[in-house]
Length: 263
Image (cartoon, rainbow, N blue to C red; front, top):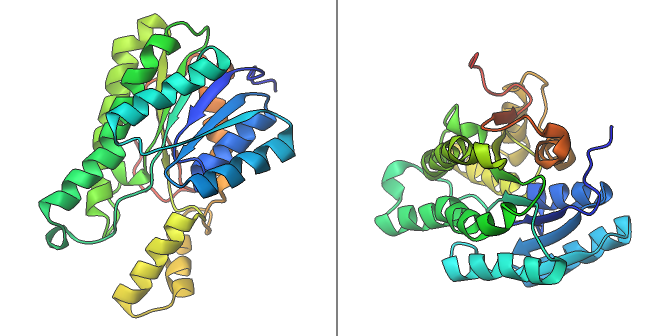
C-alpha cells in the first residue's frame, strides 16, 4: 500500500529516541523528509545520522525545549526555511515523573502541564499557518492509554495527557473544514527508555525486580507482551499519511489490549 508520503515534510518532537525516533525513521523509509527535535543535541545528531544512513532521506536536527513558546515557533520556522513548507506535525514529549498525588508540589504540576500540554499548544499554533498551505496537512499528538484507563503511580501523566486529547478532538472539529486532520495515539506499555525507567521505579516501590514488573504488565495485555516502538510507528505513520485522509478526531489505542473498556 502506497501511503503517498514521498517528499512530504514532517516535524517530530521528542524524536531522538523511543516512539518519536521510531516514527521518524519509518516516515523516512516512506520517503518523507523528517525534521527531528529533542532537548538532547547529542542524541539528536546520532538519531539523524542513523536515519540518513538507513534511508538516504535528508533529515534536519533541531535541538530545543518545546515547552518554551519561542523555541516551538523557531522550530517550525527552521523547517519551513529549510524545505519550504510543512505537511505533518507530530507532537511528542517525555512523560513527567512517576509518583502519587501527595508527592508532587505545585511546581511539578506546572512543569508537567508545560511539558505535555503547552508544548502541543505552542507547536500547533506555530505550525497552523504552514499546515493551511499543505495539500494534506495532518497533526498527531502522542499521548497515552492512561487517558482511557489511568495508570497507578502516574497521576501527573494521567491528568495532563487527558487535556491534550481534549485539545486534539476540539481542533479536529474546529479545523476539519479546512482539511487539517488531528488525531492522537494512545500508546500502552512499549519497550522504550521511558518505560524502563518506570519499571525501575515500580521495582523500587514494590521491592521487586524490573523483570517481575515487566511480566506483571505483560500479563495485563491481551497479547501478553509489551509493544516494540516500530509497532507504534506503523500506526502513527499511517495516521499522518494521505492514505488516512478520512480519519480525524480519532484517539487510537496501540496498547496490545491493555485497555479493558468497550469504547
